[in-house]
Amino acid sequence: MSLKAFHLVFVTLLTALAFGCAAWAFSSGSVIWGVAGIAAALLVIVYGVYFLKKLKKISYL
Image 1 (cartoon, helix red, strand yellow):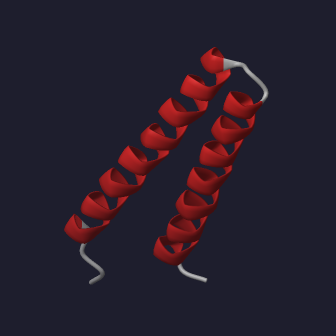
Image 2: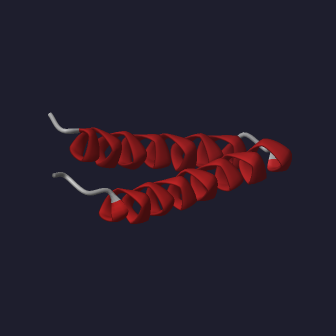
């Protein structure tokens, strides 16, 4: 598995986990942890976009 593929899978799973934890926190009545879960998911998405942009600049030669 290439580094790019690993990061895509990792970012996707981590984003789903963070949104799932946020939903669980909201359903149990903890607004603070729910917001923290959403913030974590958004940060992971920003990291994924940053990584993909940085990977495009790298030469494979």
